[in-house]
Each structure stands twice: as structure tokens, then as C-alpha cells.
Length: 115
Image (cartoon, rainbow, N blue to C red; front, side, top):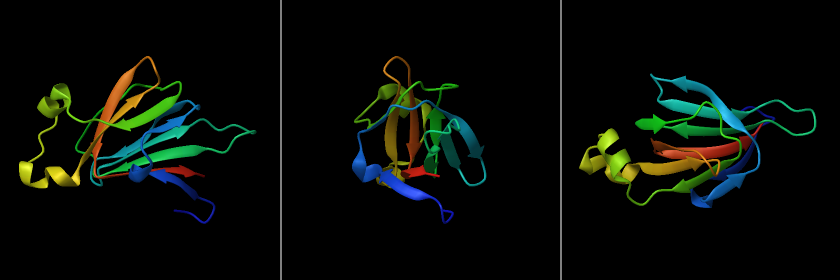
């Protein structure tokens, strides 16, 4: 994190709701790191959600608002993402929604930051 970055929330703070639009900002295959970010706005700071150790995802081009919650069991996701049973406890399945559209991210860490 840069010196101007502020940690706002993590996995322990779920469910999490922001009334800001987010879009996929970057994804690193080699580091398995996904970043969603708000648009720049003179009145509001940029927010960024970072997911680490991503093993699977289904995303929209934009989320009008962003609601992140932990999924209990979702057969569609379990069929899509192949996580060995021995390592399953290290991963969390997170549902992403804007109230109308849904997606998901399977990862081991998530944090919301203000840049």
C-alpha cells in the first residue's frame, strides 16, 4: 500500500456494501490478483477492492453499486472452480452484486482501500 492508502475493510467485515460504481481495473495472472476500482471523482476518493490468490471469477464490466457477501454453497461456482479439498479451507467464495446483476470471486484475501 502506498503512504496515502487507507485500509477500510476486509473479509472479517462482510457483508460489505458501497454505493459507488466499480469496474474491473486490473488482473495479474502470475500473481492471481484482481482489482476492482471506482471512477475518479473530485468530490469522492477512489476506492479499490483487491482480491488475492484468485482461483476463479465471473465479473461484469461494471457494478452500479457493489455488495460483497460470502457464499455458503453455490453449485454453479463449485462446478466452475476446481479447488482441491485439502486447500479448500484457505479460500472464500464471495458473491458480488449491484442489486440486479451478480458475479463471484473465489480468493483467499479481500480488502477495500481508499486511495
